[in-house]
Image (cartoon, rainbow, N blue to C red):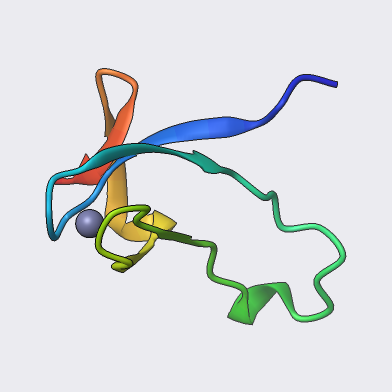
Length: 61
Ligand SMILES: [Zn+2]
């Protein structure tokens, strides 16, 4: 199984980093599950749903 990673551009410090993307599995209440990603540089936590894919990089639109 290939590693499931995404490239994210931090909305706060503009750092581009690789993050693991964890699909919503084994979640009892999926309606409350909001995948997030944490910046490796500044620690800013961004919600995946607030980011959009642009040229293969998830970033704030
Ligand atoms: Zn950051």
